[in-house]
Length: 317
Image 1 (tube, rainbow, N blue to C red):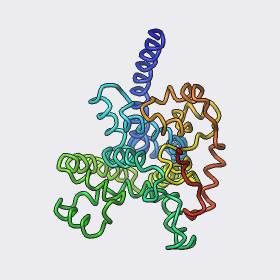
Image 2: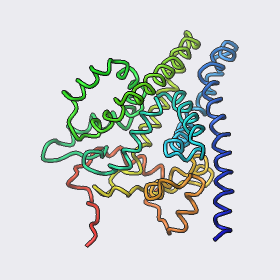
Image 3: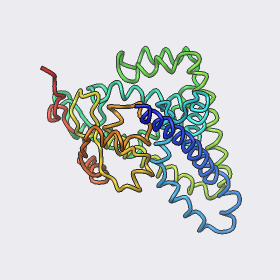
């Protein structure tokens, strides 16, 4: 038992150190994308713009690292975890408080009727009615909402309260989130991080000058990958099964690059397990894969699904 505890302590320390290194690497890569490339390299030749492609393809591994900070798994020191979470989120494009609370609420409401992305009620709407909103959400909408959200929170707090009370349905996901975000300390943090986010992006577009469209394409690519791959672990999964998510098969090197995020089912059952321990937990719990990562992602293109056609959570007798 003591040997197991020692192993977990040592591997946990190694994971924290690795997370800090990865955090510094991703911050450096984003600074390259935003400033170093347009200031020093693009003036030498437009072909340097192709260096943005691998950075776009690292979008989801980058998000996986932010995800560790969201669950307080990036580093055991809360100030360090908070610092890196906020810095990484700023260069990602959205205040940390917004992505953090949205994700943690997702864990609490996973697959409940008020939270699902792809389903609709056949008694109230049709598939064609649900399709535009669904495809917008999975193709770009999720990231676009996160990126533009700081603009909304610059409104006076009393105006935000009035909007919430008048236009947001009580007990909805949005209402629950707004209750947290409109607390004075939360609103101050969102406004500060939102200002820094918009400043970082605004200065970057200024640095690109006439080549601004290159950065625009890179951010569109980031937005597509974040939005398109966010819900693949939940698409067509049982309604109201709060702890269920898919584990998806991915080649070993890609799984490590993604910080084992493909083992999402294990994560939902054990959200306090750091990414480095997920394969071990998957083996101990005799986990099973519910499909391949890329085929499951493409399956989302089948469109929204009537909630009546989805399996229901099993209820204990």
